[in-house]
Length: 510
Ligand SMILES: Cc1cc2nc3c(=O)[nH]c(=O)nc-3n(C[C@H](O)[C@H](O)[C@H](O)COP(=O)(O)OP(=O)(O)OC[C@H]3O[C@@H](n4cnc5c(N)ncnc54)[C@H](O)[C@@H]3O)c2cc1C
Image 1 (spheres, rainbow, N blue to C red):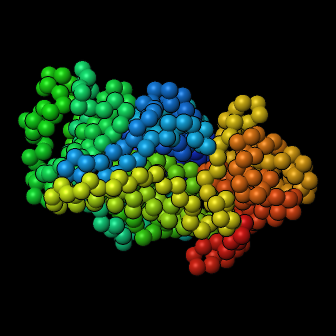
Image 2: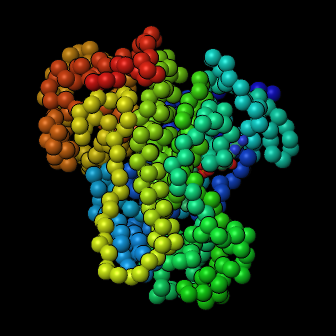
Image 3: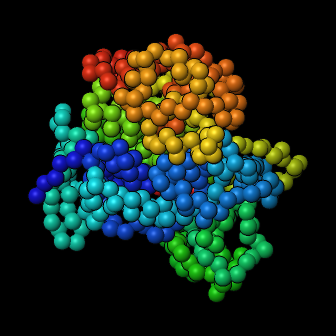
């Protein structure tokens, strides 16, 4: 038996679910393959930032936000081997320009369950949950995947124009696309113990998170949502993994915090963290996203968020190409996303290696160290479908409340948006207005105060924002908006263009 779809997504973790959800939302037919019939029900990602919650909003999961643990005052503290604070990343306790708070803790299985449910309600969704991809082949125009049902052994053949491998850190698809992987040298092992306490502990913070680089095993402790607490012990190079997989060891490690009968253990696993970036994210019609495309230590809480950003970046481009856009557009997926996620991987590597170094080289207490205050990075996209204006194009757009009180993305949906001064928007060439209609852009002729402030910072009166919420370009007159739109239309419509150095030349200066 065989089935033909537009896109096959391998892997139903958050990256695959998000990619599939965004594509079916635009009317593309998608088959999603994963051996797990149910979402994995133990926590993995816990920290989410404002951009990630904004993506959840696009995915129809914003109703989960009230259940998240919203960080108030305080932050993530890193202590040296002598219990002295050396690094501090404050939480952002006020709503940010993204329309959400800056830092939360959440429960990953909830998001996965919402997305699984939403997908099953879509007429464009072909569910292969319970199935495993066993073989992948591609020609110039088609991808063929053999899937096998995990219980019955039944085999089927799926064909599609494109395949996205969201098959996680041990990705098979990555092996087909990019045997070469760059190692950013942040490899560690740690024991993760998630517990649901039946009581409070004075040794466990209710809002802050901390890492203490105390030898022989630096400890991280943070509250996570649903009343749970996460502990993490970094294994040193001499530790034997199996020792940390023994229940007796878990109770011993938790003893300074809780009495043995005062908690339920929700999970206990030793992870091996790597910091990897594959050289290629695309080969022909095969792509990778999420942990398959980047791995990092968990110190920044950005692994899942990065996978969701991949989905937001790739889905509208795949959909445009299914609708006839030149496939060189798809090369901008890696050129934009890889430099962006590299910033997070490097920051997470620096944090993880720093903790290990302090623990392995405790030295003498000496003078009190200076405390470094750090902020969450907010990089711009690499070269691609956006202009080059510093600070504007290629940066994440704000999400203002519109004059009617709605959050902007709720009005826009997963589409292009043109937003700005009504006089300017009304003065564009009729061909520009027709192009906005043809590409399904949401045109919002207003400048609510938060938007006005942001436009003023950039000397602009209007913005074109991509479906992934990154800025295509800014304009201060109708001519600029005409030019911006004409270039966008070239990217989305033109059937014949020549890739330059593997990238789309028309994107410069958009
Ligand atoms: C302890 C821990 C703490 C973390 N903390 C954070 C955090 O605070 N914030 C954050 O943003 N991120 C965090 N992360 C990272 C985050 O959980 C991952 O980045 C995220 O789950 C990756 O999602 P993914 O969809 O790319 O891959 P995965 O979630 O790994 O999903 C891959 C899927 O592919 C499927 N698959 C594999 N092979 C096949 C095949 N042949 N056929 C079909 N399906 C296949 C698997 O069954 C799996 O379901 C943490 C991770 C861990 C483990």
